[in-house]
Image (tube, rainbow, N blue to C red; front, top):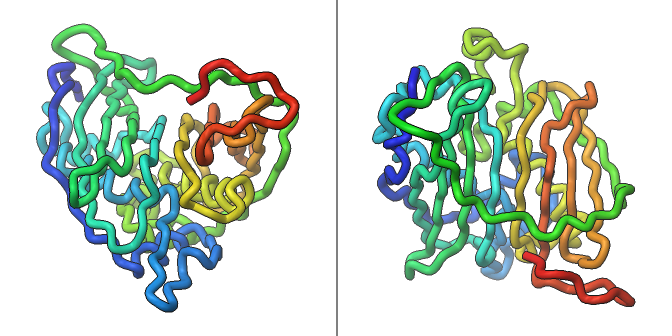
Length: 302
């Protein structure tokens, strides 16, 4: 299997969705998030979507792109491992939104384990206004890069990383044996390697593992309910590198670190029972930049 650097710039057709209350509720249910803001639609109240909801439409857009990528077959896609994500939410997503997402290849690079492809996805509303911008990377194990030198993606940099060294909060998240099935159906994120034991074995996986997007979604539920006071409309950006596989059932530990000067930015890590990082270099930004009291102004932030 080879992936050509000539795929950089390739763009897929748009994926569309009218966001219904049902899907806002189901996405929260996909990770067992009982925050009432995702469910209480009494008196015509619009429901804010889970911060990670946009990933559903993004993967639909990436699916539209896959058919145009030279050298990538349906079988090859099963070898892909989601390795990185960086999402900026330009405004909250709420029920009733008419959304469209377009995916474009922005990087193809050689890695020891295979070829890494990075895709940028832009999601807009019915008026064409930006709603979210994401960069997601997938490593295709054993794949080669052809037709030229690597093309590295231009992913926005992290803010000045002045983090406190001790976590301000730690949490254990329980994942049941059916967590991948619940996430797959409620979040509409279908990939048989996460739910079908025979397919997982064929892909040489040790068992059923949680989706990369599901791993992020569990972490974001925790961050939203604690660091955002349960208000998903305050989430502005989240980012992280996906590493160790999260087997189900298992427990993962979430460690959250505060910024030394800004009370709207956090670093987080998600660690497996074996102590391996499932998400490393995690970053979570809330609202506008605000400085902690009695602190000197910091350098440029986000």
